Every structure is written in C-alpha cells, then in structure tokens.
Length: 231
Image 1 (spheres, one colour):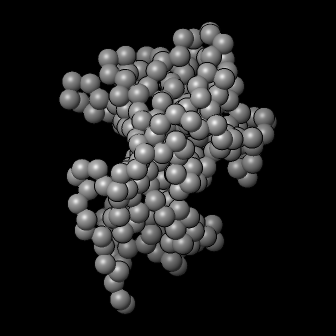
Image 2 (cartoon, helix red, strand yellow):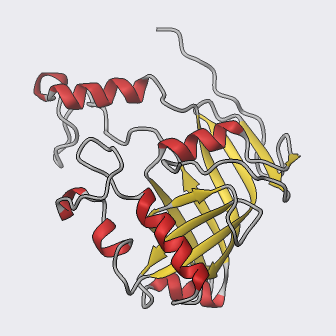
C-alpha cells in the first residue's frame, strides 16, 4: 500500500497566520459536530485537563463576539485554577474515538477484532476512517466565571441546558433520560449549583491528519447564528 507523506513544516511559531472576524468554517463544522471538548487550565506550572460539555455561541445579548459556555462544580479544581489564571486552552475534534483493532491483542485487551465487532461498532469505525472532519482545533482564550443568579447567568444556563438535552437518537428534546447516557448532563449542566464558565476566543490553531497547521487570530465582528445544535 502506498503511504501518504506527512507534512513536516515547522509549527513551533505562527503558521500561515490570518486575522479573521469570524471563525473559519472548518472550525465551526468541528464545533457543530463534536459533543465534548477538553479544557486545559494551569496554575503554578501544573496543568489540568477536563472533559467538558459545551455550547458555542457566535454572539449573545452579552457579547458581540463568539463565546463558549461550560458549567462546573464551584468547588472543582478547574474553578480554583480559573480564579488564579483565566487563560485557557481548548481542544475540540469530531473524530470518532473508537479504537480500531490491532493485529495483535495486548494483555490489556485492546479493541476487538473485526470478527467480534457489532454492526454499530463497525459503523462507527467506518465513520472514523471516512474522516467526518479533517481537522482538530486548539482554541485559546480567557475564561470568566459568571456571577451566580445574575441575568447573564440565567441566560447562559438556559442556552447550555437546551444545547445539551438529547434523546436516545441524539435529537434535542426536553424529556428525561438515563443518567448513564446523558454524558453527565444531569450533574454537570442541569444541576442548580453549577458555576457558569464563559470563554472568550482569542486565537485558533487548526491541524489536519497529515500535520498541516494554520493559525487564526479572531477579532470582533461575528454575528452569525448559533451552532453546535442550537437554533
């Protein structure tokens, strides 16, 4: 089988840097398709990464610029980190995370071979190999903890809750669902005690599966419709 050469261009600095007033369409597509993102915070040279439900809003009554909404336990490590250092980095991608089978099963088990995969697992594997999206996006920005009980807090809670309410088919509704299937929604989104985190986007780095990298700096001026399942 002919191998596809990887891109070996240097990416330590700014690469193909562009200044934009809207998120690139490839990043919007990634945010539309993905259900979770990884949030990185850091204090005292100790990084901390969390898997998060999120909602992307290109604009809102409280911000003309795009923002990403998340919620967390007020006593969480990420909350404490943000109080000290509001600078954050997010990683989002919509590639299926199902591990493809390996030629030799490891002692830990690994993923099942083709003869043991269900039709659903096979479908997910095929979706993964067909590359639903061609990029992952690293998004840098600053996070703010919205004052609990404020009108702004209520607005972002409602948007985030609506955006993370699914039925078993992944279709949005307001019906209760099994806690094991809601992706943590019941505890991390719907709980009245959660703290709203609002991330203002500063810049984005996109990378494709071949290693090509592009950098984007975001300036104000985006007033597009809400995505990632929003109306």
